[in-house]
Image 1 (tube, one colour):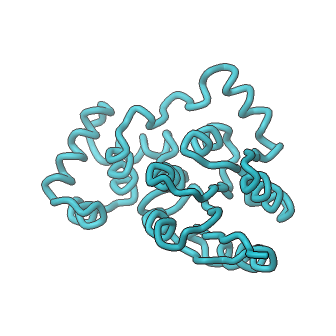
Image 2: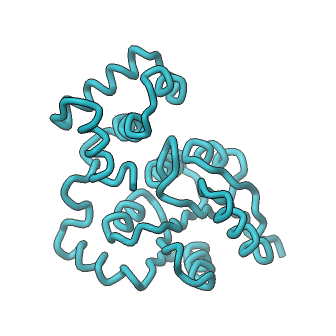
Length: 213
């Protein structure tokens, strides 16, 4: 019987290799990547059945990467494995197309349960936050105040890169745009958010979860 194919995305090598060791007996590991842009590219080329991804990754966070993978009509199921236990992150991950949300300190068996649920077409949220997530949805504030959902996908990308300390030149290279266009996006971003400088942009990025601390 052909084994399901998994792609692993985590910027901590020890965690990624630990996941490889956990999953290889049951699944075919087709790749390990360490940032969101590598993940989006690998999802296109390796054709995984499911993806295990972290939220806190450099260059492009896991939620934005999930959005781009889903927009590309990838068939891969996505399970978020993260240290962030706030229900807001779970809500954003599910909205972005994830089929599972598991905390890193959970038992290994819980991750396998989430994978099985996703491969069968279901959704799994760790019981530790499922109740809080449901309450947030019922109150109608799952996105939470201060989220970045009002920004365009490009603006969210630029916001994370600015928060990581990238220069306009570096942003231009990563996004395959001109330096002038990168500076334009940053200026429009600051205008949209009503902030005056880069420090305020970074503070906003942290508050909204674009760059989790």
